[in-house]
Length: 184
Image: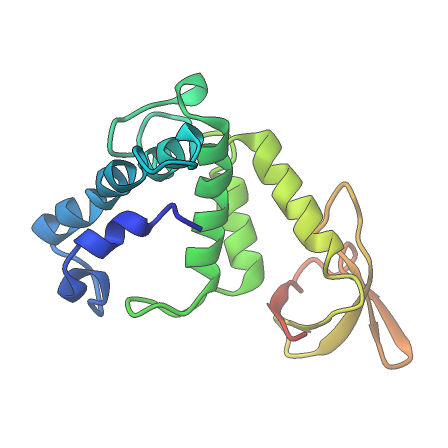
């Protein structure tokens, strides 16, 4: 919950800007990780891992993140977990600068980044656990149909078994259909 606390030191004009940040604004925004670390590192009772997580939650496995360009084993485990959760939340939420992406596109993009940006074990665990929480939930498919998730395939969690009234839809067999949105 504290990973973005450094944004409190960034101008509201940048944090709340609609549309893409220019280069100078983006460089300023990237400083929130350092500001968060500075704010948290000396607070009594907060473990050092919390401050490290704020500092490193934009680092990536391939070293292409910021602010330090760390990679792999040099990134704290908690920061790796928060990085995945942060990206999932950013992509699946409406923001001032973009609309939420469809659920399947979020998962597809994150899966594409699995062996470069993210720790694959952590990402696979997130997808598996996320999908298991959706059993019994209503979803909308990319074809506009609605259904309730009945079962998750543990080897291909996005390809669930759905019930729509009296019909059963196996998304493993329907290659063109995806889960567009979770309704509730």
